Length: 274
Ligand SMILES: [Zn+2]
Figure 1 (tube, rainbow, N blue to C red):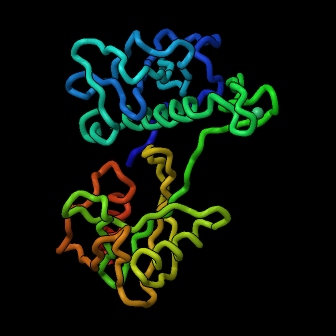
Figure 2: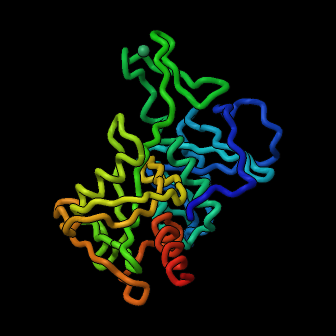
Figure 3: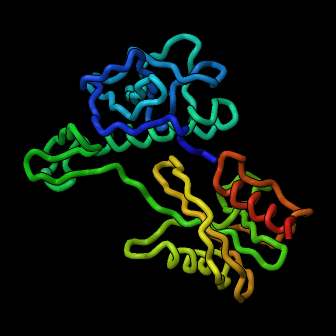
């Protein structure tokens, strides 16, 4: 699963100009959602073209300070480096680094999109001691946006329900997922989304785990649930196909770094142990 390493610590001071005693700074450089990486994709690369004042501290990893910087869309990049979306780095860049880059990407995007107050349009400033941007005119404060989403693997005896989202690559299936609506509990969202997407009822929700998913700022909260009735009816606009599968008859699954895959693998392992 995509998970920050245990040695990573969050830092709430947000400006690189603050007094840090770290000897090295790892600068992750983003052009919108793309990270500057070595040609092989295994390492991030810093550039001198970063926008002045755009660096934000993310945290500390071992003895390194992690900072994220933004560049203009047409910035020149060092020879032997290239831009890469984070998904394309799964299995290429070490998982620890991909997870930290996923944090950095969300922070950079929040910093970029909250430069002006959403209430009165005054330029905002970074707060010194918490990750927030505040309006000096009206006091409106903006924190990084995190969008919770439910994920649910529905089971029926020894089978699991896997669905193909209309946006998935051909042949790829996964557990059901969907964003929470304002005012909903996560359990409400599971029941509503499962019914909206494939037309069935579920019961016995069990929490599995959660995972930050930086595309662009989701928190996936995963459950298993048992089939409780209704005819399997993919809604067509989100879900193209949905079917019951057993462990010996699986379609193409999501990548190992995703919580969806961990949820599927864990459930099948439990089935085999019964
Ligand atoms: Zn304001």
